[in-house]
Length: 125
View 1: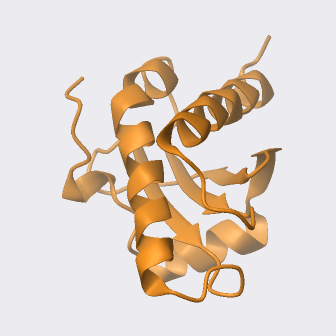
View 2 (view 1 turned 120 degrees about the vertical axis):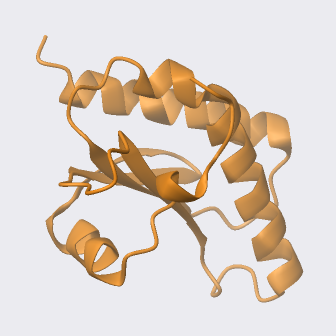
């Protein structure tokens, strides 16, 4: 699997995002929260992922964009670890729910913990 985050892997559909928040399940590894659900994806993607940071906690767009970049980068670097053993396509939304600006190391460690929790929840074992 390539270490890219291509356009077909990005979650952009408003209807799918709304459905994700109404019907989806979630796992948390503070300061990150993952909302997920199995989805019927039309373009043969194994997953669609979106990231979000609250405007309430970070007023300046510069701060929100930096945190979103950190989250996308840590997901991009480690997605092959999370995604390779999935058989059902999923839609993910990764939310940053903390109140302080994180470093890349913090985001990366919490992202791996978050997807380990996700894997343990969806695995049939």
